[in-house]
Image (tube, rainbow, N blue to C red; front, side):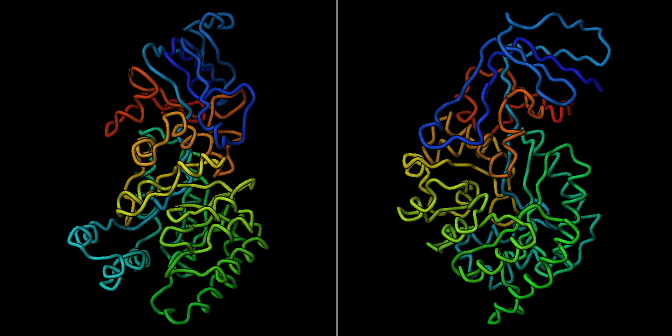
Length: 418
């Protein structure tokens, strides 16, 4: 494989940074720096140069060994999308529940029929680790073709110590064998298993006393998550779990305020969560809580769209000075798509974000929500060369506008064409 790649005649090089930022917040989210008629130089897997074509340093002979030249005339180059919230390791799809939903059944009614998270958890008990790995790898390959270069994957469909460990071991294998940058999150507190209904505290004890120590000892997770919401885990449950995770070196990422004003945002900020995600029910108090913190508010448009829920107040949050990240929530029950191009479009269509704000939300800010903005999320010297080249497109605005088709032509991850 070539260790030097020169992409030349780029119509627009998007999301460039001379002085890299961790994130963009408030009015700054409208800033999107680009270079027209540009080049991008990649050496040994890193971004080593970029600028105007007329300022390209020296000549790069096309016959040089380990050298690849790509002509991007009429095309744009973006940093790869970072998808900071997925559940893409799962045993089977749930389209029958989708039909029930079309027929008017509520989430609660579907759950009573044996559907929902517990349906997937039952199937997780029986599937082999190899089968789980192979199906997840296919999903990773699919999202790669659509421009995703980094992804966070959660457990949470196990709900037993054995099955949670199975999921996390699969994620570890994916990390080792996929070109994507992958982060792993332990989400044992995703739902309350049927046998613990009415004895919720006992399940929380199991998560704290059995699951977390084993996961930490095997170094299987980067983060810990809790579904802190109405009908799931309480603020008190969440507080206990996050404290236990913290003692084992696991930083928090929280499912918060999807179904109601749950207190999930507040407990997430209390534990300096890297992100709080969903946020459909976010009011003035929650916005004040999030101001001037290190916690990234992360909206999951796919889930709200698929479930017909209210949309998080993204516009109010940005206008109040907050940063926003957008992620796919790729999962079999409530967001069966990992297409970050679609999420980019939803940011503008459903949440009234400008194209610039949406692009920041799916690149730099989602990289921050994975603690990767020092190496991904923008075009900057020394950052990992995770980029994609579009098909010929007329403008940056075309990316969110022309939804439904794959506008990515060439994917480069770790400095290698995929």
